[in-house]
Structure formats: C-alpha cells, structure tokens
Length: 121
Image 1: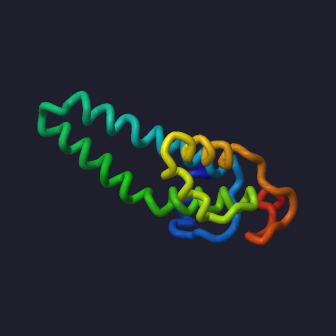
Image 2: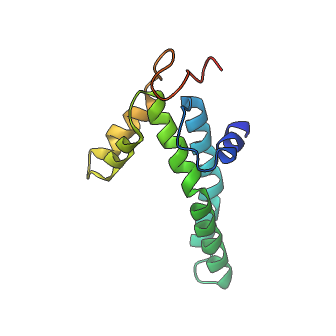
C-alpha cells in the first residue's frame, strides 16, 4: 500500500524515475480498486445502484489518471526512454505489447539523464 500512496503523493510529477516495484504495485492496487467497482456495476446494471457503482468507477478512473500517467512516464525514464514513448500504446496490435515490455525491463544502473537510480535512494 505504501507504493500506491507514494505514487499518489507524486500526483502529477512527470520528472524523475520510478522502480518496477513502484509501477507494478500501483497497477496491482488500481486493479484491486477498479475491478470490484466495475463488477458490481455489471451485476447491478438493471438497478439504480449499478449506476452508482459505475459512477464511482468513472470518478476513480478520472481521479487516478494523472498519477497513472506520471508513474508510467517515470518508469520509462528509469529504462532510459523518454516519456513520449508512452504514446506507442496507441499503435494497434503491437503498441501495448511493446509498452508492456518496456515496463518490465530493469532500470538503467546508476544515474541517467532523468535522475539518480531509485534503487539506490
């Protein structure tokens, strides 16, 4: 949970570097929060409460949009790539796979142009 809160504290910070663990723990907690809301919205889609769950889901997604982009850009910085590489996700079929590979790669050892190695801090 500390990794999730760390990302939220860096709400719209796009500079610096983020470790793999920070990125993937944030992604895990996002799934743990989003999935139940979405499932409940689907289960109760015929009732008014389904609309409430769907609304909560969309509010959460909008609230977490900037931190998600920020941690993704910082993760790309850790691998030595510009944050603009995030846009490769919009390339049909292969873009998302390439971005997934980038997010799974280990960061550059030592400092790079985006800052010091976060593993050493």
